[in-house]
Structure formats: structure tokens, C-alpha cells
Length: 587
Image (cartoon, rainbow, N blue to C red; front, side, top):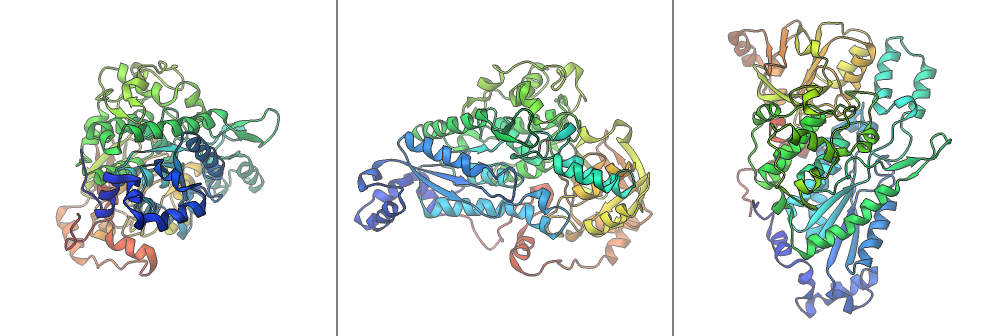
């Protein structure tokens, strides 16, 4: 599989790598600067290959606050292996938990494009022979995967690892849901503050199967990351000391292994598009469904397929789900189980082994990876332990943990994390309560205006409408925490920490004239997860009449980066990628 070159410069780097700097005396001024910055000690060092380390270190995100330490270890290991190391840091990394609940969340999904563009810029301006991405959370992980495919020189990804669980088996979602309990009078402010202080004990991506950890695990199945990438905890506890921890030696060893691996990939000219195929994307979705990962993975894998030039039909996911049992449930679907528990029983390899041994999955063990083949990993992994990871014949569900629903308000599809939905809510019918923003909906929920049996509709929060398709963890957690038996549907998206009957990515979105924009308060919404259906019980004629009266969408943001993003972004069913105008032609 090959994609088109982004531009002549990237095509040149694919062909020549750092040989661009060896083309003649006219390149010596640049070499002089490499000596000045300390990358080269002398011109003799120019003969060595160049590896670029792209780090997303920031102390604004706990999953990234230790990446400076890991980055220094990685740089040192690479230098021991005889390569010139360029070390670059990217900006624009957004911590979803901190950006949640205010305007800042609108920057989260767009940051995926921003980060991939930065990496293209770094490598495009400073040619190298290979590069390695060091990240961990939210949109940084898929951005690095996208950049690997776009640039297509030897490269791989390594994460900083998941966070440990907090006191009394808590995590970040415990705090979000506690806000709902507090608003419903079920928890005191003192208890809420105590929980907030103890739920997140240190470095790492939040402790459950949320978006960051889902994407870090999928890297192992895609073939872009080493075994253990998604589950080895970032830290380990110090006995008898509250909130005291140290970097996990197992994670440090994985970083050292990554240095050796990227040099192997470079010497053997193994590139991302030698690894990424439709089969490897299938493998990633199979893992996702087996472990009940975040719905955001659908957006990101579709975007990755787009970047690689691979056509991938959203409808195929329902067919795939029928071949896969949901063998794992991790927080939020199973609040007492966290990533450290999953790692203890074998991690991603053990999940895939449970799926493979079922005999019904479409898992392709011959798929290439940065560490050999997927089979090299899966076949040597332990069998399911029966508690954290169940065998397929005793699965939590006979079908995978994600489903795509279609209907008269979701012509192009919508996504639900079925592993987080109680079985008695798979079929649900209720009265619509319509809100045109997340903020409106959250205010109503916290003021107890949402009751059992309601369907909360949040619209104009899609990629274009938001803009940026901000996550809906605050309202979903408030509903769950308050103990309200209600559904929530949106053209926006959810955090990986969301649980309950929450249906997102409704396409087309309201801002693009989608039918979710035609729903009125009091309309009856009918949801049938088993039949993959979502409809508003209104006649075609009535919907057509409403459509004629539907006003033209007025952008919420008209300046800056978000305005540009809204002008070019595609819908969720296409991965919310940025389009290139028809009058432009890719090289």
C-alpha cells in the first residue's frame, strides 16, 4: 500500500533521508549549525545516520509530565547506538481532562491535525533517516500515527504509559461522576474534594480504558508500537507512602528497547506503509471491540486510513463486531478494573490471544509490525486469566464492544460504546430534550431538569458545528453520577471515560444540515442497539417540512485557528479529517 507524497520535499526525504546534507559543499553552512547545536561534534560525524526524536513533553498533562525524563533516556540510548540525534518538542498538546467543561475543549480534536502538521514540518525542514514519536494522551497519539504514515520513513511510536489507579480503586472518571452525585445531593463537598485529591496519584494517561490508553493499546495491534506500549504503567507505588511514586523500571526498559528497534527499522528500511494495511486496521478494530475501547478510536482509525489512502467503510464495523467477543471490561465499564490490572494478566497480547483462540475472529496474525509479526506477539502471550480477561466462551458479550447505529437522524452513522451500556437499556425510547450546546445541556442536568426516560439531544457540537467536536464527559458523567436513567445523543463525541447509553458522532452533523438539527423538544427518540437503529418517530413529510424551514448554520467561531479548522473539516463518519479544496491537487 502506498500513499501519494505530501510534497516534493517529503518525497525527497523518502528517497535520500539525511543524504540531502551530503550532496555537496553548498550544504556545509547547515552542517556548521549542526556542530553549533551539539548534534555533531565534527564534520566526520556527518557520515552517521540521523534519527529525530519528537517529544510531546508538557507539564500541563500528567500523561506527559515525565516525558522529558523518558526523552533524555531515549536520546542517550540512541547516541550509544551510533546515530546523530535531533531532539524536537512539539506544542499544541491538549489535556482533555483539564480542557473539559469550558471552551478549551474545542481545541482538542483539532490539535490532532495541528500536531501531525508540526511533525511534517520538523522532518520536512530537517531531513532525517528515521524518527520516533514519544507521546501518551488524547489526540497526540493518533497525530503521531498519522504523521508516521504521511511522511513514510522508518518510524515508530512509544507512549509514557498509563496512570495507576487512585485511592479505593478510583480514577479521573470517579471525580467526574462524583460531581453528578454532589449536584444531586448524594455527596458532600468535602468528600468530593477529598476524592479529587486522591483519584489521580501521579504520572501517566488516566488509569482506565479511556481514549489515550485505547489508542496506546491499538498501536500494538496496528504494528506501530512495541508490546507493552499500552499497558505498562508509567510509575510504581512506593510502599506505605500516600501519593508517592517513582518511574516504572519496566517502562524505562521499554523506552530503551525502542531505541534499538528504531535503528533496526532504519537499517532494514521498514516503513509505516509496509506495516499499515486494511488487515492491520481490522486488527486494531478487533482489539478495540474485544476490550471495549473508546468511541474516539473510530474517528482516529478512520483518519489514519484516510491518511494512508485506504478506503474503510463505517458499516463494516458492525459485521466485524459479530465475529468478536467483548472479553475485557476496564474502567469506566468496570470501575474496579484498571490498566495496571490488565497489564498484570498479559495486556494486549493476552486479549488478542483470547480472541484468536475463539476461532471466529478475522484477526490476521501474519500482519507485519515494528517488532516482527502480530503472531510473534500473540502466540507467546498468556491465555486469558478468566477474571480480568475472559475466554470467548465466557465473554461479557458475544459481540464486540462498539456498534454503529443508523436511522433517520443518522443517515451516515453514529457510534456507541456497547460495553459501557447496561443490557436493559439496549432498547430505549424516550422524549427528546434538545440543547444546542454542551453547556446548555450540562446546566439543565445539574439543575435536575433531566429525568428518567428522557433522551438528551446535544447538537451543533460536531467537527464543524462546535467547532472541534468537544467531548461530552461532563454531561454524561453528571447523568451517571446522579443516577438518572436517560440516554444522550449528539453530533459531538464522548470521552473514553463515558459510560451509559450515549450515542455520538451522529452524521451528518447539524451544522452540515443533518437531521439531528430537525429534532424538537418532545419528539420521541427510538434506540435499538441490537438492531443498530436510531430514529426520531416523525414522518418523512414532517422532517421534510422542518428541513425547508431550517436556517443556515452560523459559525460559532469566526477568527483564528478554529475558524480555519471549521472551514476545512469533514464529518465524523470520515474521521473528521481536513479536506483539501477541489481546486488544489495533491502531488
